[in-house]
Length: 243
Ligand code: ADP
Ligand code: MG
Image 1 (cartoon, rainbow, N blue to C red):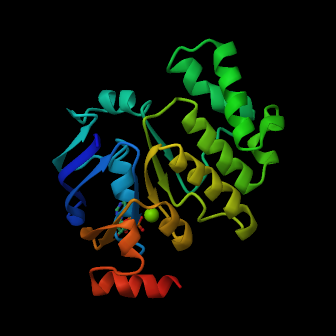
Image 2 (cartoon, rainbow, N blue to C red; image 1 turned 135 degrees about the horizontal axis):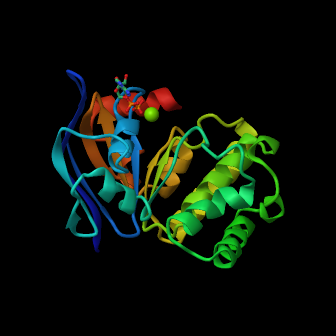
């Protein structure tokens, strides 16, 4: 197994308040790491640190065997390899769907417009939205926007994907379509970290679960064991509260 990401002794505080404390874990290529934990436990902050959206006070992150020098410029380069999708689909409201998806490939990766559009269409087809290229974000449902946000991240051909509660603000009937896309990515061995409140889905895709509480990793347990036999009482309570 090849290690794709290694986090060592990461510490992050907002002002005086510690939010992540001594976080260490690894993610191997092709693995799905699910991050669970109560609200406020630091899940989003962790994901944001792994994409250079939040500075951290100490600790080291290795990506593809290289120690990350956490300068804004380095993170900008890394964001081509590390895709991220948030809870609030942050599509550009003034661009149509095709332009939303191809902006990064054309501007950042210097792909030709024809190449970028061809790939965008291929990806849109995989999520059932090939007919939506000329529409604007406001014309789409929440679930459709979130599928576009995933396609936009995939258009850069990332080696690693971060998902932070991407279905949390969707109407229930929209959730399944988005989860299916992520499950397909997992099946295709995309390496990813997934924060989710959907426990059935988490159980289905997790190779490993990190359970966070109050900024600490309370346990790191294989997915096949966590949901039936968590190691800590805190995780047991958490799972019961999610039923
Ligand atoms: P989760 O995603 O698990 O709900 P977060 O990472 O969003 O947790 O938040 C972890 C802690 O950090 C919480 O106590 C939250 O209030 C705090 N926090 C998050 N963002 C900020 C911020 N920008 N400034 C100050 N505190 C923050
Ligand atoms: Mg969060």
